[in-house]
Amino acid sequence: MTNAPNLSHGRGYLAIPGPSVMPEAVLQAMHRPAPNIYAGELPDMMPGIMTDLKRVARTSHHCAIYIANGHGAWEAALANVVAPGDRVLVPATGRFGHGWGDMATGLGADVEVIDFGKSDPFDLNRIAETLKADSGHKIKAVLAVHVDTSSSVLNDVAGLRRVLDDLGHPALLMADCIASLGCDRFEMDDWGVDIMVTGCQKGLMVPPGCAFVFFNDRAQAVRDAMPRVSRYWDWTPRSQAEELWQYFDGTAPTHHLFGLRVALDMIHAEGIEAVWARHTTLARAVWTACEAWGEGGDLRLNIADRAHRSTAVTSLRLNGSDGTRLREWVEGQIGLTLGIGLGMAEPDDPRRDAFFRLGHMGHVNGQMVMGMLGGIDAGLKALGIAHGRGALDAASDVIGGAGA
Image (cartoon, rainbow, N blue to C red; front, side, top):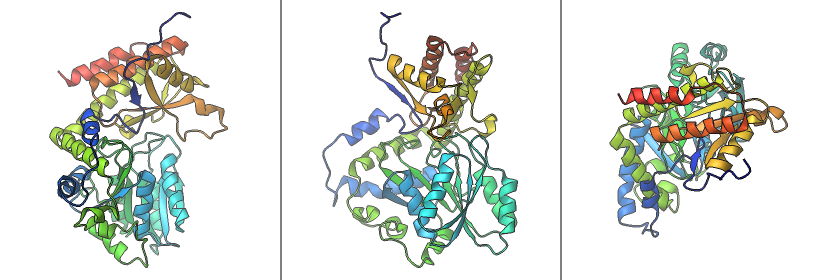
């Protein structure tokens, strides 16, 4: 096979869990000269952008935009409601729960982590026990990651609100929807979430660079009682802006906003319920293929129960170094880039090369997912990695059934 052709030339497919595939319409909207930031098209479209962002978040309350990534959104949210010495509770189900907790520690908060491991969702009973023991209501906020991008677990945020309400606990419910917004169903107001954070580079289909913090009046009241909030992170002036610069405390991320306007138009033209349904069907096709490969083979999905899997990302495990071998083969030989197994093992743990992830978020459709699965199937065969057969037939049955 030394003379076998390399089949990677042509348009590559970035199937990592963010940045996601960017629509051509978004990229074309961004490919333009710098605009006037004081008058004209860009300032005029900001109120509509804010309204349509809230539609995606399913909230009628407030939104602030930051020139940042998801980590910036974490800090912005915390800076507005958590003062040094305040206590926060972090139920962690992967790398990013711990990361948000570490951010709170860096701001001087007293952080209590309940670690549920990397393959299980929140245990609401355990969280309830911790909150019930907090009879003095010292816990000011609960930091909940809706979908942890490392483990691909989907957590029950609405159930967490029920726990807080049943106990009469006043802690703010804060949700990280960086991986899930615009992919997995999320209902900010109906689920009783006080603060939600996300970024533009996943379900919102815009290149990395903008972060968003959504918050309700209850959270604003906590912000108003804070002894101080840094000028840059303060969400109040950003959410009440009248001039373009006020939304960003300075120069706006002009070209990101042009792209975001188009991305929001695409989401609302499809309809958010239809967006969720599309992600659900495509994810089921991915899971079905992976389950078929696992029968008689070594491939395992990190989250065993489908009810607890995100429809945006799937975390997987092979044996030994096979995860890395597979990633390198499909990228080098057929132009398909899969995600690394981020945070699933320590750097010096030999198992770290067993893990990898599939991103199926945002601007994806049936033929893209089938192409990704076909590429993985070819890689398993080329590398001699043990796997069950019939995965592509099973996935096409899911997609074909959805279109029947």
